[in-house]
Image (cartoon, rainbow, N blue to C red; front, side, top):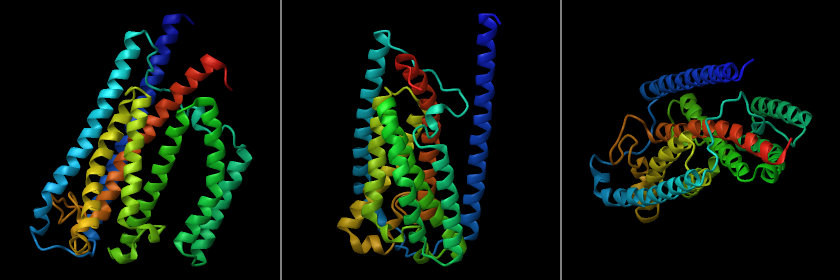
Length: 324
């Protein structure tokens, strides 16, 4: 095969993979939209509501939250693009879009396959058995965490040794995956209970309060900013995830501000925040549905960004150091 024919075949394969990715993303977007439409129209959430216009008096706090987030976003943008420009001006490598199917760096490379299969089987058996046996959701969730956290830490420590900061990328995406599961469980509980918010708090309902939400969302937001700086802004999917995380962070700064400074207002409906129904701006989505959407819109581009970065980092480190 000639060089030109090989390049053409490789480009054709990449186009096919990108087309498959587009179809998967479109399918996910469509199914998510249908799911949310059903939830909003058929399972309205029962929760306290403020008198109309009451929360409108707190727009300065929302504007301040937006300015804080905008300042950090500007800092991340400037530093990431400056690092990218410096690399290109000095002839540094350019990381093209990842294109391989399930890049090796996404596999468990340190944890033996047998251990992964045993953990998957044990998780399924315990989750089903615990559910049928009436165990609380938090007990099942805690047991699964105790099973998977050591395996995850073992794998990420290996990736840190061999791939550097890519390991942090894996850890952040894994955290958001767990966060996404929590919100998904809460929405399923709402559907099962007819929208009763008091009975729908996810797996770890004991942690469903504003300080935990604020810390987790802010940590993710800062982590995504750090990753953009680390990859010099050279991952468009990571930019999308960061933009969605910025919107989510504005919500949680505002909500935490109300939670700390205006507790009565918060508990009587102010927890709707900015974009939820009956919020400062408002939308058709109740808070639980809105924040499920926020987390989904953050997680999906994060996952695609990790996929692309896995292909890039594998190529770079194999070429430089010959890692397996």
